[in-house]
Every structure is written in C-alpha cells, then in structure tokens.
Amino acid sequence: MMDGVSEDLAILYRAVSRRQGRVDYAGCITAGEALRLMQSGLARLVDVCTGPDPGRSQLESHLPSGALAVALPPSSSGSPVHDFGEALGALAAATETLLFIAGSAEDSHAAATLAARAGFYCALQVLDERERYLALREAVMA
Image 1 (cartoon, helix red, strand yellow):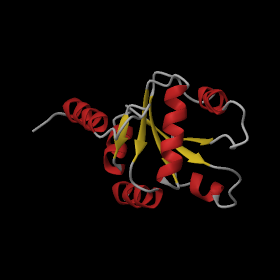
Image 2 (tube, helix red, strand yellow):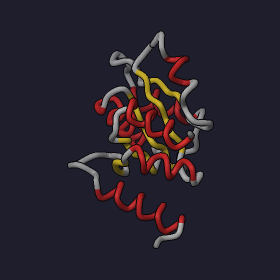
Image 3 (cartoon, helix red, strand yellow):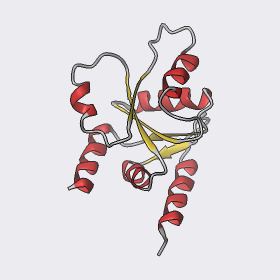
Image 4 (spheres, one colour):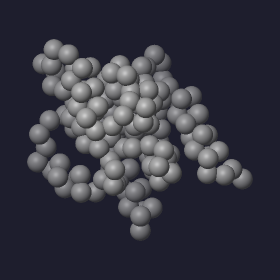
C-alpha cells in the first residue's frame, strides 16, 4: 500500500506518461486524480471559460476553495500566450501545479498549452469533462 506522498507522485508520473503527441504542457490527468492532488494541497484547479457566460457565477459557486477562474483570450488577440500568461500570473505562480478544466477538451487543451508556453512549468489538462468532475467532487464532499 502506498502512502499519500507516493500516491501523489504516482499520479503525476501517470499524468506525464499520458501526454498525447507533441504537446507543450506537462501531461493529462483524470478528474479523480485531480481531486486527489487538490485535496493533498499539491495542485490548484483552473476553470477555463471562453467568454461571457450567464451561468458562470452558478458554476463558480460549485468550484472548490482555491480554484481559479480564467478566460481564454479571444481569437482576435494578437498575443494570446502573453495575454493568458498575464491573467494567470495575476492568480498563480509559475511553479504551481495547475489543473486546467473547461467545458470542452479543446478549451482545456488550449489553456494548458498557453500556460506552458507562458512559462507555467506544471500545467496539466483534466481529461474528464466538467460535469463528471463536479459529480465526482459532490460525491467526495458528501
């Protein structure tokens, strides 16, 4: 049986081993693994949105304490890496382990990519969709 630290390291190892193709970010993580790392205090969730969302405040009320909410820069942005890096840098340190979740896999992939290119060393894409993450979180918190 693994102790907590060993399990956390195993999760990070699996995340790196799941990197698919040539991606800039550190790896991919499941919703369950994300919860484990957050509960251990080793990672923070970054909820990514793509613009104004009327249901956003309701969703944010369901995010765990310490989670961050950051918007992807618009496609018209002349320097998306810089813009996203500035917004994220105002909320988190480049050395933190950050878990990117969004309404779609494409958006979480884009956010993790932008974060890595902006110098955030341990950006991980949460593979499971937001609804599954929230359902899993509710089950764990109950």
